[in-house]
Image 1 (cartoon, helix red, strand yellow):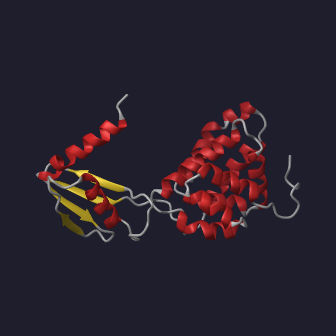
Image 2 (cartoon, rainbow, N blue to C red):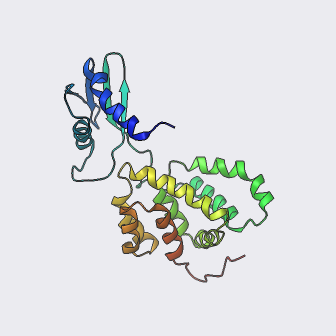
Image 3 (cartoon, rainbow, N blue to C red):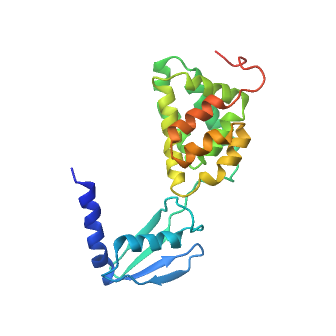
Length: 231
């Protein structure tokens, strides 16, 4: 297995060689390009720090920055990699229908064979909501009485169902955190679902996503009669 430290050092040593004979351009959010001078004596980490500062809208942010790097024979083009998941985009009726299907089957289908038979259909439903912001996915569940009860039921199915639910949520939260697309919305998300932000914010800041999802499921309150949809 390739040693990751040696691999990183190899990249550091090769970077000046890769860009020395090429024109390097930074692309801003409006598509305008600006030349960037990189010398063979420049420190790799200093160059990366400069790029990160350029890519961030808030230079004080410590969140990771994702970049697209396109290399051709004559030039290197670097632009910020933006998320396809918009927190402010409303959940469509079709997306909510897919969420209802997934939660209902995961919560109350007790027959393992039936769940197995539904695997492809559930995967397709998941793919259709892949670009939904993870907070909007969780918000849709937590603010719908039946789906909220379904979430509690999924939480109680620890062997197979709950880990699968958590895995999907954690993956999208990790991805969006890399775009600084999670922390700015934790407070509003907590208010909407009725969970104390002081429980969620530290978990988000420390990137404890599995614990974050678990806390949401455990602390969100079921409206009206909590046993209404129990099966």
